[in-house]
View: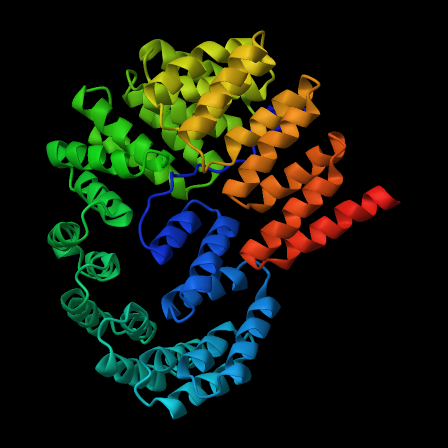
Length: 482
């Protein structure tokens, strides 16, 4: 199997930032790594079993990972073992999928502790979903009277008010929340949305309280773009690229500002390009045709048109546009990346090397781009150079799934299944993600080491609490015995 097939399924991931256990797990979730997040939380809760916030996040991950019954059983057992513990009943209410069971568990928590803000918030959320907004509002208000630092209660209250078509009350609630929990981004983001005439002020205040927060930084940059404040917007996008270098929309919007500053693209042209995101393929293509005609020096307009043509399977037209974009701006990371990826998709790996090299040298923190460059080298005429790039990526980004998966496939293609298996085994120990585990199990069979792989899977199951790893281990051993 070509290395490229591994690349196409990868998401852009961010590096793991070290913070508290819940913050670490939330960072892993943003990086689309629920398995690693569950492992981190399980390990933390073994040492700190009373951390309710960590339990909440673990439950939420399990419910979104098809592990709902595991979550319910875990917290039902906990509640039955400690029936006087209000937190245990609250957590069962959060884990239970049946509305009746959930409501009864929340009520049990409230009966044990009438001031249990989280349980009150849980009941309020259920009333909101059921359309009983008056009861939901009353419970959210009661919860906040007991704990005005509880974000879920604040966000639940303003969401319910919006559901009741009362944006003025929702804005007032968000204002109060910004005073109670100023170091939380959500109230500031909500205020900017509900009061657009004061969005700039709210986003600035939110950033002062939450410097470097991804959502605030990006929303602030986009607001300044919309206001056509070129100097302030460029500064804001530089900050946005520092916190979100992997975000393709942020990169595109920043590139638009650079072209506007160089008189290659008009503000109207930039807005027209942004508007195509909400249009159908044919309508978007017609609009971009107009932008290209009115902005003939815009490389970015051609990149966007090339990408649209590619989506409509016009690969020849896409290649023409992307080559023209590279000719207009030979050092453009966006144009070179788009052209290189198209050539790679068309199985023209040798031709893809040069544009991908230019793009990757410009965006060295872009792991997916680095993988594409390595793949082009590996599938072209220099597998050794591709392997070196993959090793460098794995060393620089140890919590990324892409580099070890691509490196293992390259080693397999070179006839070294043992080394391929070893690469994936080490990677799964760092980050127990399903795609890595499946790849490791497949490589184990190719390398003749299924028992060792099954043992590793069993250990991952113990660490994460995810029974699917144990099931995979049994299946692996069963396939050997047949």
